[in-house]
Image 1 (spheres, rainbow, N blue to C red):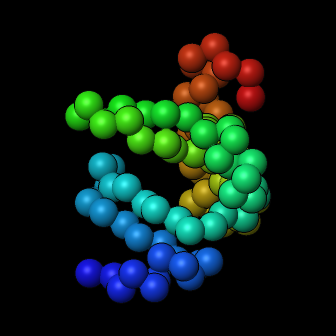
Image 2 (cartoon, rainbow, N blue to C red; image 1 turned 120 degrees about the vertical axis):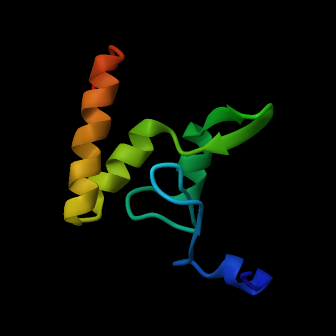
Length: 89
């Protein structure tokens, strides 16, 4: 279990579960600040619990900004998925 103080670390990542059903909680991201991310948030419902989550456009912007190959591949997947839903990317 993480100590509560670790939640204030601006580079902390907490992961729960295993892929493809893993949830990652990041205390900061590369491409967008908290205020903008919070203002753009989406609400997802899991087992009847409403949970604020990063909007897909902000997730996409962050994936593009990291410079990691895995994130670039994730960005391509997100773009294809959202185009498939009729969203402009």
